[in-house]
Length: 320
Image 1 (cartoon, one colour):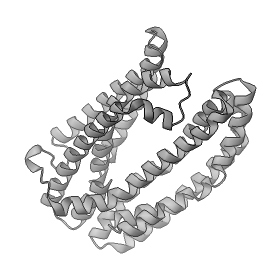
Image 2 (tube, rainbow, N blue to C red; image 1 turned 135 degrees about the vertical axis):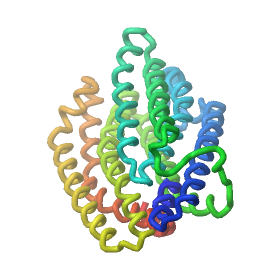
Image 3 (cartoon, rainbow, N blue to C red; image 1 turned 90 degrees about the vertical axis):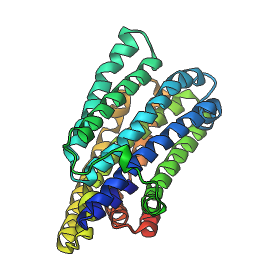
């Protein structure tokens, strides 16, 4: 995300060569960090899963799933970086195609691998791994086919202090957001362990439903960020203000509609994931509680994304 913000501003200022160096440096560095992180997580898998709330009965399943899933994060991290770099140059279509292709393939493979091939939770993780590899192939095709306005290549890799400073000062905000969100979810799950596996399962479902709504806003912000950065770099402030107003309007409308839908359908939604009475009771209360302030989400993220797109790291981090 830090690379995408910087590239948009560089393109707006008509510094294409510099943008290509930043794109290559950000993408290659992101892939290297993903590999290192995956190795560290695999080496500390049991303590990590325990910290995140895995009970004795859940731990074996969590290990079977996570060992494969962590490998897939190497590719998914690279895909996230590639998507941000594609969107930063206005190529939102390729990012959309990559994500939809991976998501649809994942949904198709899940029942096949889990049930038909009797792989259980390993099948779910394998489906994710295969889907991420296919998504990666979409981005590789995009960068290598000449359709990308910004060139990418190892020859353009420039690990310069100035580049990392600009990328990291913006990227740190998203890193803190992701880390704090992960810790928050882990602590919630740990707290639920005292109430049994049904409570852990219910909160797991609730957090994923809430994330679904959040991802819609994140997706909108992914489109807003390059527009804001490009117009700021080009000093087209009228267009920038128009984009801000539009983003606040539509993300707030979505937030209000989503909150209403969740409150009206919490019971049938939770019932789709289990029939246990305790699971249902905890799930429907937790879902409403986690969604009560969602209508403010779009307004908050419009301004936090705006500051990051403009290269204003400190206010962007505070708002995040």
